[in-house]
Amino acid sequence: MQQVVLPTEVQTRFVQVYVRDRPYLICKNEDSHAKILAETLHGLGIIPKTRFGFPNAFGDGYRLVGDGFCSNIGNEYKLMGESAHYKLGPNRKHLEDLTAFIPSGVVITIDEKVEANPIV
Image (cartoon, rainbow, N blue to C red; front, side, top):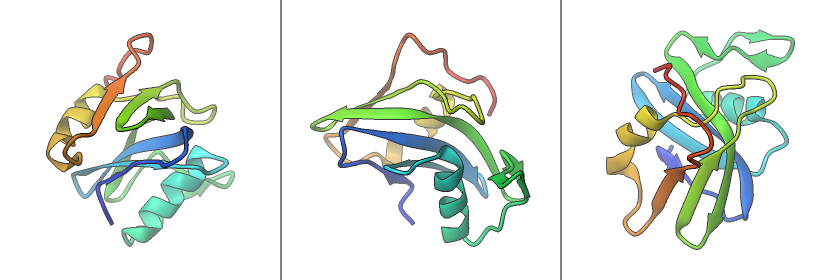
């Protein structure tokens, strides 16, 4: 699985997760952040424990550190907001850890109105 999955839609949900200490930014047009997290973890061979149908934010081999919405215009992507369930928002440190995996010519920023999540 690619470590950076960017959307083709104008606005989608995203999760920022470390899996086995590798950063992943997954942007998808799904109806919930929990579904994106579950699909990502399953794709990487991890079956997360759940609570009320939602994958736990932390588990054996992974930790969710950011979530929210991604909007894009061309090759410029902006991370903002937070999910109703996990309430993390974008994580600046995680985005810095992904720098080497961001495709050439792509710019990803965090909406300055949203503070970076300090949990890493």
